[in-house]
Amino acid sequence: MAHRVITWKNVPYASYAQGIDQCRSALVALLSSAVPASAITGGASDGNRHPNVALIRYYRPDGRFRCSATLISPTVLLTTAHCTQGTLGKTLVTFGSVIAENPPAPFPAAADPGKGYTADEIAKAGYLSGTAHTHPQYSGFTDLDNWNDVGVVVLDKPVSGIAPAKLAPSRYLDAYEQPKLNKTIFTFVGYGTEVRKPLTGPQKPQPMSYPLMRRFAESPGQKLTEQILQVNGNYNDTRGTGGTCFGDSGGPGFHGGNLVTVTSYGYTDNCRYLGGMQRVDIPVVLTWVRSFL
Image (cartoon, rainbow, N blue to C red):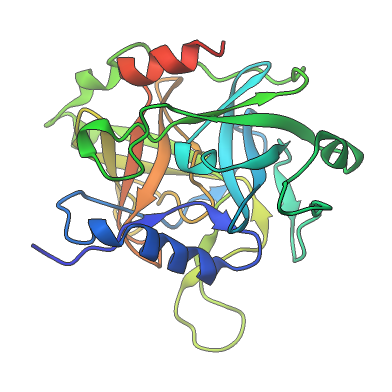
């Protein structure tokens, strides 16, 4: 069995490298697992193609983080469990397509990081606020049969002017098992880092946090399990354009106009391999998510 590194795709506010280290230490028990993991590069600026995809920013005891999420009702955003579990205070939400061309990102800091954001702090900065909830059967990346890496953010005020995404029907992806899966292209959206060559220094492509904007990429299916859709996120694969990277955690995977997955985890530090996407079309997920709608 090859040695594998599984990385989360949420990103700490202060340091991308810190996020990788935290992911490694948190998931060290999985290094010898046979679970496929992924990260992706490539893709393009999203513009207004997916206006219902948002960036979320939140505090945990170990720092500030960002993830991606999708509006599925005027008051509910769908994301991953590892982007909601342990959240302190409120979650900041923005649907802006371009957040910042250059650092720093225009987000407020909490007056008390130990308590996280308050609704007033977020509102004064001109953003939406909400409360995070984590799937009660989320296994914390320890049980492949009960992965359930799903969370929601319930907004304090409903969103108007943005059409929510449509959740896939129950067991939608079952119709796309192999050999059909390899010929099926999925679209992934999020606010993750872009892998490219830096302007100065060694010209090795690497995840770059800025410009911070919403992007999308298309990836072919590779493997389907009861809980996970695995896709090929390598931008050199001519069947697609790339995929997700750090910060895309919680972002949607679309097919046929349906929201079928949320971005869950990855394999490599440079986002150039297979991608692990949590299915949202399975009953254990759909039943819980619909309880908020």
